[in-house]
Amino acid sequence: MHALLRLWRTTVGKKVVMALTGAGLVGFVLGHMAGNLKLFLGRAAYNHYAEFLRHAGEPLLPAGVGLWLARLGLLACLGLHLVAALQLYATCRNARPVLYERYRTDLVFSKTSLMMRLGGSLLGMFIVLHLAHLTWGWLYPAEYVPGDPYHNVVAGFQHVWLSALYIVAMVPLSLHLYHGTWSAFQTLGLAGPLVNTWRRPFAALVATLVFLGNCSLPVAVLAGVVRPAG
Image (cartoon, rainbow, N blue to C red):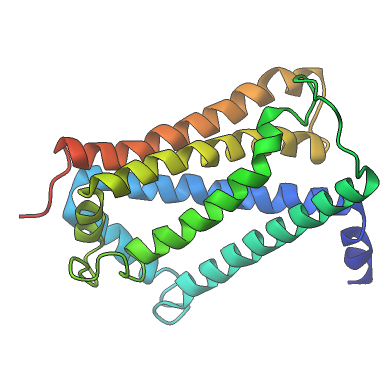
């Protein structure tokens, strides 16, 4: 335990924590997107997927416990990722209070990395909106039907402003995924001539898949490809 605390107090340790928790969050984003794409299969398939999540872990665990354990694990990853990022930023600012006059675009701290902090803040606000829309039912309480996630998703995306906001939010998410995936390889020591030839394309592939997959949902609802049940 003391060794972990000592590692956490170092810059390298915080970067490793960011890389590992980031990998967990990337896995969640990809899995979440894959599940949401079941919207194209209709109400029964999508609601069955949501029901599976609610009963994950049974019969070993009581109903709902597996889902809450996954949520707590996700919150732990998100919290550690955020704290490590803020502390690394504070360390960087304290080490050099006078900013550089310009940045070279071929360095790690390129325009993409400079957008990570702003993008992370925007994503935090988007997560709250996402929960208010689909989990808590606060955004459109008159339209929200408990236990019918297919209806709630389709009804929400029929509002043009909400669909547009979801699509716009995918831009900082995709940039965050691209830069985070690419830099995680270096942080974890997975670098070298062979790895370096494909880690940028791999990061770009992950970011592109998430952007296109998530944006396809509101676009499909607005275009009438995915319609309300019945």
